[in-house]
Amino acid sequence: MTTGVQFTGSLGPNASTRFFTFGWAASSHIVWYVMPTSPQSGNPQVAWDVGVERYNPTQCTYWITVRNLTNANITFEGRYAILN
Image 1 (spheres, rainbow, N blue to C red):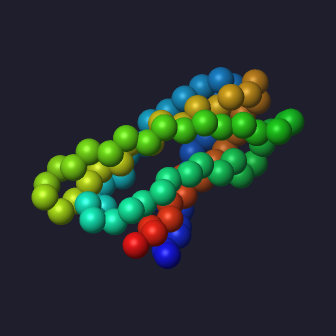
Image 2 (cartoon, rainbow, N blue to C red):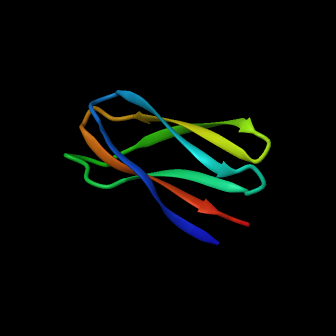
């Protein structure tokens, strides 16, 4: 298994943003997750959705939408784990 950080970001209260990352092997099983890194106050809570789009026979693009579920500013990392 390989893990890493693909992107970082910040969001204001109840805001959302969308990231994309491309060139991933279509044959790989990749899990995406978002980890808050520095809440300004309270307990950070985020939600994320992942979409995948194949742009050629061997590679994919992932679209990750991150939502801040709190009334505080947050920063976060977009992380991945390649399971095969």
